Length: 112
Length: 114
Image 1: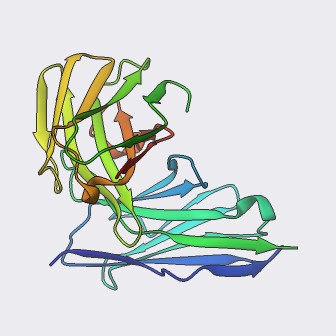
Image 2: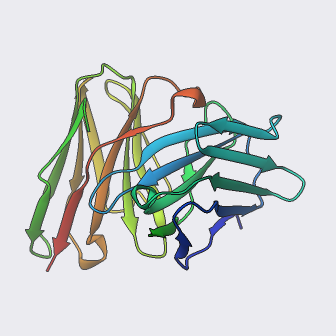
């Protein structure tokens, strides 16, 4: 069966360090992978998109990698800040006409 | 979030009663989606719409129906609410199926069925 896995355990990290979150998938051939941020009591907010033929994408302090051989995406936040504390969701899309399928998310806690 | 509102924000209802959740957008986006979010399951697609009066089922559509009579409104109806439908419901919009845009989500409706 198709599965998207994100670490269900919270990731605790010290301010200023790089946070790395993982998204693994099985039985998918995603053409696109997106990352979202979700704060408590709010809806997810779109952060970044990476295509299957792209290895890496950057936006300010964010970096996403996409390895279709390993079936994995890594999401990095450099110089992390307490304001980065949130749950981060990955989402896959197998084609332009398909809908997004979401992982369960990983909660990131950045402490001083 | 700007451009998309969900109502009500919170609702408690009794088992067996009908419930309608509303999603309203001011972005004139063609595509609208209803998701539910539960611990351990993440966001799961219930129904979606690709235009006025054009809707289709998602992966967890049983017990739900939708309607879209205007571009700006997408209604989700639980015909006879059950405790298993206790969840947080999110509406999302996108202008295109092109993934560049991502989805814009509403703030959610927390529904409790007692």
